[in-house]
Length: 80
Figure 1 (cartoon, helix red, strand yellow):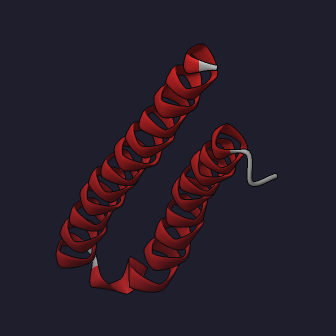
Figure 2 (cartoon, rainbow, N blue to C red):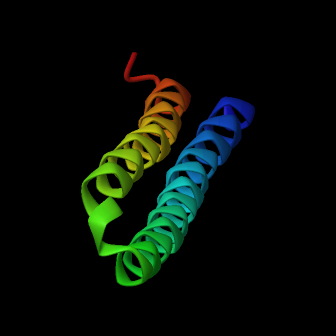
């Protein structure tokens, strides 16, 4: 019985670390992408619309990775 509790505790720790690291990575990735977007708009303002659309696609893909980490964390916790 004690082994099951230890495994459950480790699963909770893994779920917390997983979603935390995913959020950190996504935040850094979107921040770096936004920095590049602003620099490109500053250099070529006429490309602002196209650059913003490309940024949104990249940000959506990064957020999808965070959602996958959330699903895996829920699986570790036994919620699915």
